[in-house]
Image (cartoon, rainbow, N blue to C red):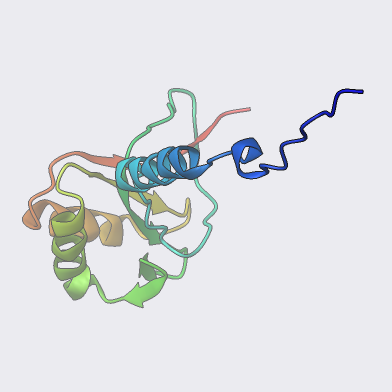
Length: 135
């Protein structure tokens, strides 16, 4: 009777997952680098409705104005005199961003104009006022 030779070499059955892990980490780095982070204003306001409202996409700098006159930037209440400095700081992080003012429909219009002036003095000319679509 012939003897069979059994090879107990287990190492040849292992799967090398190192290249797959390399690809996963490279993809993770790619998505982190290409992701744009949006800085929220920190509050929600009752925006006025508009027939011509349109959605803006991209990385934007958000400023919120409440009905009582509070100005919110980056989840903090700021004074109208410090709007320019805050926008300049945010612009350094995102030089191509547009400014969107989320003003409450009962916010003082004079304050809205002052905030717009401060944003323009910070070097941003692309300013929009947020509105909700009319029902």
